[in-house]
Length: 190
Image (cartoon, rainbow, N blue to C red; front, top):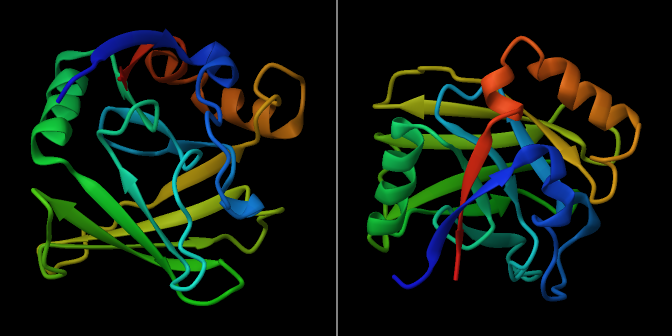
């Protein structure tokens, strides 16, 4: 895999985690998604620059992809990023219907799907979601519910530096975890 790993500051994420090419990605999936409550050392994702399959209501999100995913600048964050790169870890997000409110997430490693009895993930918009800005993700590991509910907050481009509600919610939710939003983050860049 060619490319470099760069350290970036999350506070200015809207300047570097942005669309590079135009795709037919639905508006509800655009923006930066902050993963609140995630126990792993990764913080934000974006679906920008990914091809949307409008026939199958799906997209593939490479965790190792350039500027798609952020990882903490820690030993565990580095290890997770390197493992994602080596295994070519990818999520296929398959929506149930055209409302795009609920999806099954299929994990792939080394190009092969991970069986559902090992990892079964889903996500759905919360009832109080405005324009797809809040999602819940459910993770089931090893056929036993190890329920890790990750609240995903979408922050549309340009709002991270402005004083809008999503930004306040994002910053307020992380004040007790300064290492999550204030530290440098790692991103892969080609």
